[in-house]
Image (cartoon, rainbow, N blue to C red; front, side):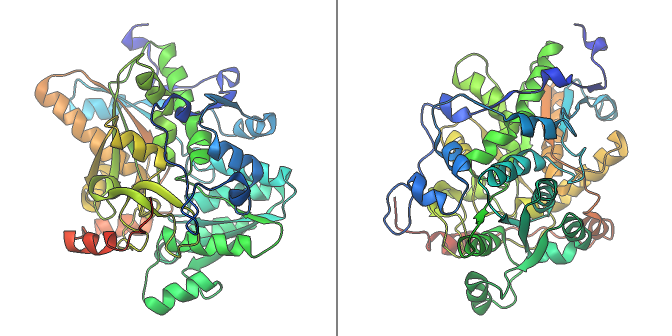
Length: 457
């Protein structure tokens, strides 16, 4: 079809929605390294992982061979409440930038949680319910994941306990109230309710918290209460699997119009959005069917890919979780209390870490003020107030479109708009008032954190 027939928004029919998740690990020649038991230094068994996670989720976590894993009908029915999500041709942005580039974005903010996180939340809650559990525990940074899980648990009648990074808990009171509205309990982390939280506070009473801290508390809570399991909103293989619905829908929509992106851009914190967006395209690249340029965008204040090391590290600050081989800043690294709460994790998905290590994608870090410049520009042109996390991808997409203007290249750019920023107005206020700063960790700070990495693997 000709370009002028491509609509502003491309919607799929319900019949075109994915029937199965795509498991990119099946096509990776070098698989992600296994999770290790910190006590033994050996790969975690299904039985060991089953003490923390639901049984079916453990099976998905360890599955490196099946390319497609069927989506249960109950989950597909839930998806229909807000999926398929629109793929938007950013005609207004292209015109404003006066660029020959063609820009598309996949918008995941059309549900109450305001982000893509609901795609995995409903899956994990479903498997917990099927296992006969009472409830689940989790952590959340900016609050999108906690909100999504609260929604899923409310729908299925499960108890939901959320440990929210303290600085986000304080900056985003309305986000936590949405979680409570859906029935979740929300605790600022680190807290005095767990041994891990008390230990972290004893070391630094003024800490603003981190996702690593909150993970420690949530895991301890789950493993010390019968009938509960821990669920995670990013990083793990199972989460990237569930989020592959984003990329699968994207690819189906683009294929309908014969559009092939040259570059695919996504924000990267733990990896759920980026991994879900690029998975089917990366599969084509791995199989030698087509080539793409993949760009992971992370905050300069928490640059795990661009300045981290590829090593085994604890997934949490309290060191109660398994060890994962990933790009990491060290489990004890506490990022500055910036406004991209969902991108404040010290490590990166083992899947994405391996792909990056193999040179199959690149990474860039951007300063906070540059991100919000792009966010406001996008809001004024495209009419959507983006989440700070999403705006990292917007920043680089705009930069690449400007490069196309300078060089005359007609590249096709696809990026992920992970969600909306209506609960992030405190951050927008800071930017508009001119009091937002750009904290970037020094080499000395990072080296001090690297020195504490576990001597395993």
